[in-house]
Amino acid sequence: MRRQAFFLGAMFVGALVNAQPVLNPVGSGIGQISIGMNRSTLETILGQKLEIQFAGNRRGGVTISEPSALATLRAEKLYGSEVEGIDLFFVEDKGELSLEMFSIAVPCDAVSALRVRLSQQAKAGAVSAYAWGAEAKPACRVWMRHA
Figure: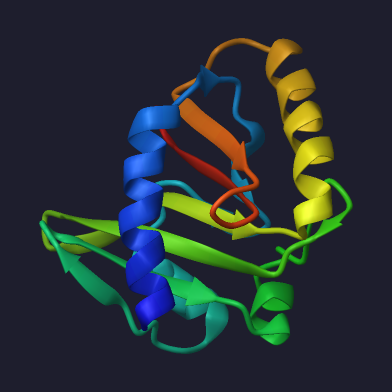
């Protein structure tokens, strides 16, 4: 619970400070997770309710790190790097929670290569409505949100 609260604060602030509007290199998501999807859709895919930790201002998040859940979502790897977990950040819109942003935990030694790979993918296409970032501190993560 403490970890989730940390990421909720840190990732929203980081996203605002480090946003780089670019081509969305992984579509609008990873595996079956995509920006804008409803909480209920994700719960149907997983076959279980998500225990959202609310952070105020109609926003909340949850961490998915169980290998079986990542496999169900087809989100075990990102460009060949193991995915250790995914933080999902939701915003309430018209009474429904929809996915606003996600942050993927990856091994720290993979961040540099992922940053290069994501940059190459971005340069290969047109600018889209998404922003992404790759960070080695305070945790090793790749994130994506609407720009």
